[in-house]
Length: 423
Image 1 (cartoon, rainbow, N blue to C red):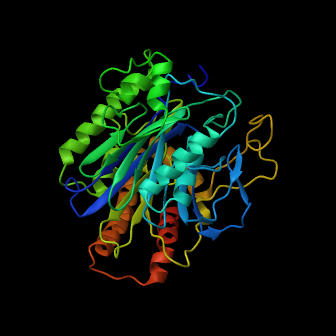
Image 2 (spheres, one colour):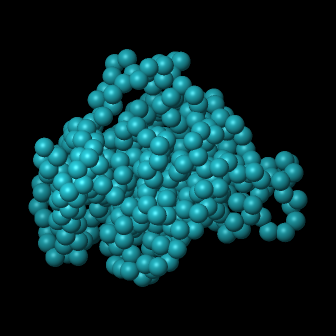
């Protein structure tokens, strides 16, 4: 099967809602585990209006553009159009994960799951709307094409976790077929496997007919999406995901009622469970945690690392506000002759490292070479992160009312401060 590759590939997404959160807010988190040397950049795309008939070029496929697209902030592999995870100006967050199911994966180029993440964020003003956008585009255009910047195809289908200030959704797909589960309270995680059983809130109109026609379901008794559409013989990476899923579920259970942004950051840094990946072939390339307060008067805050290995990275806060100061330090260079955009694709390589990535890479090498200096730098970075968290907690708690221009410069300033420590 295309995409068998190294076994340790993985991703983990988490969401917590009241009463599992310490405050009246929804908290979202994701580790994006990707090929070891892939660079993830943080991209802000402002809201825009589009003319009738306009089209948008996604990673491989050009599709019809929406009349209006929302402002989004994306953590994305620098070679593609979509995103591993991100948020929009309405407090919607989306992350995806790879899965392999009974529906065959196709190497034909279509929409990537990462394209669907961005499309859902750009076109959905709530988690439910984003889900409806993704499923409609999935049914119309399908999913497919290589998900890795290498000549050998790496292909998978996708599951998604979507959240907003009031609820969350798990969306799981098999080809153009899908099932979705609404989450109104408590906590939920997904880890590279189908996890929706009989508790299905919405589904593809022909989902059960498809299962019966393939002989996967008799039509008698309850219908479990995971049981019916999961492969009988799981790829090694999906078997490994079961342990991570159980570990993530247990970590959520242990912290139920007390979950904060810091809780999710600690979970995403957990190497013992395999949630924080650092292997020869794959590693956690970027991480995200978002706080979505129930009170619409309080801004949502989205933390991004923009660097690999959250256990040795800094989560930096981003808030949607007018006049955002650009952060070129976390934008990868562009190339006029980009091998990802030429057919045949990926026949050569380019250096996509942004400035923060380069400096962070040098710092990681120092940490490994000089343990004492590495520990000092690590402590300095954690202190920097704590300062950002204290400022954000004061904002979320209503203790301070920062000027809009301060919020507009918040992410830039945090990135800039981190860069200075690496000099």
